[in-house]
Amino acid sequence: MKQFPYLLLMVLLYPFFLSAQSVGGSKKKKCKGCKSIISLAPITIDFTAKENVVYQSIVPQNSSVDIIIENVNLKVVDTTKNIERQTFNEIPPKLFETLSKATLPDAGEPGAGMASRETTLFSASQIHSGRLQKQKFDLEQRYKKINGQINDRLDNLKLYRDVIYQVKFLLQYQNDLTYKQNDCNKRLDDLKSEVDKLTQDYFKNEKMGVESGDRGAITARTQYADNRGIISRHIASLIAKEQETYDKLVVLFAPGNMSKLEEDINALGAEIQKVNVNRAPETQALAKELRDNPQVLELEPAFTDLKHYYELAAVPKLHADFSNFSTTGKDELLKTYDYFERGHFVHVVSVPLIKEDEVNVSIDITPKTGAPCAVVPRHYTLTFRPKGKIKIDFSSGLFVNFGGNDFKDQSYRYEDIEGNGDSSVIRKNKGKNSVFPSIGALMHIYWRNGKDFHPAFTFGLSTKDLDRINYHLGGSLIFGYSQRYIISAGGTLTKARLIDDKYEEGQKVRKPDVTATVPTANFNRFGFFLSFTYNVSAK
Image (cartoon, rainbow, N blue to C red):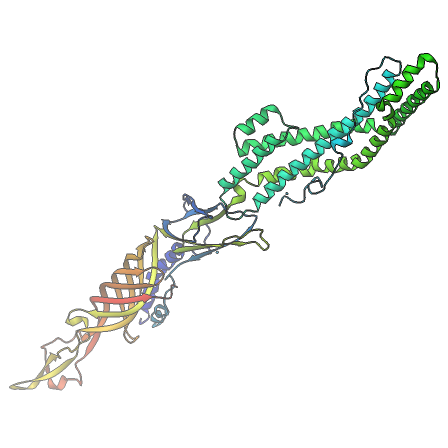
């Protein structure tokens, strides 16, 4: 029967141990069946602010929150996070066990391969336009036709050159965007303004492949999202123009057509030579005009130059490169432009289901290896304490127990009765201790508020010598959070050694019946206690 108080204690504590596990956030407990999660307003931090952040907040039990770091260029930084979940003071101290036994373009390479290559097709001085004064003779139409064919080829080469140059300017625009991508410490809104200015300047200066409505819209205002459609239409227009011009050049410079043009030039030259040989009076004036007209004599050199320009332009190679631009290059350019969306400048750390005593979030933002600019490192520390729901903690420490005379062990003596030599009287000795100390442990039950002070209901036990267990019930004032100091007071149930039920104080006993000591027994008695307990291990 000596084990009965300890068995009773374990039975009483068992429901509280279960409650402690459920309240404290055991890793084994799944959220299935929990109350719905409360989504808190996100916490927004501006990366460009010249300071680190230390943040602390009391939040509802079972809540979740997103930490949003804005204006951080994810291309040039690395981010790390650590979420540490802690529960405090939920492990019963070993003293409890002892007493019980008393019984968490990079733009990429430019798609077209032409962004960094100097491709000189031809200069304006290299493009000859044949002019022939209108002559009234039968050779005029033949000359004009041949000269027109040469000029048509030259004009299409020039147009193709202009398309290629336009793409070069477009790729330079992409390079400028890539440079903006590598900016480390600017706000996204400021970068967008700079991108809009780059876009506006590009379309102000470039004339080819821009619809009049788009030009008017982009120069009248700057809207990052709307500008993307204009850029896409501009690229599509250049691609179509290049293909159209290339198809013409393929026909004009086809070997058969070039051979036919050369034959026509030679035939015209032979006809002119024939006129020069024929010295008949009626042809002398015409021969003189032909000799005096340098344009007639330039057809053959012009044709030679035309073939040279076409070979120099390397049109088939340019077209192959442009075909690359029209597929991957176009996508890369738009991808470069799209980089300035919010998603590339926001880092989100989600903190789900805050239910432990404290959740500490640590976020570090550091420069990537080889970052093209000087990133200012940042460290953010955020602490969340939930409020609500019953919490159970433990502490251990010193107890002071006190009460009436019958609360403490008493001693008794036999005293002779004056004038009566046959009997003695039982007297109680005067007590020398008004209180008795003990060491013990308490279990504190309270409503969690996330602060450093909690009033609590208290139950516990203590002992002086392990032969006698004292049971305590009362209230506590808890100071601190992870490390706690606690003042408690209330009632104590203990055992006191008092006179046996067969005897009473003042009772007369015949001397033959007197024992060596007055018989005593243990009795349950109520008193009071004060205690100072603590838990500085945060366990």
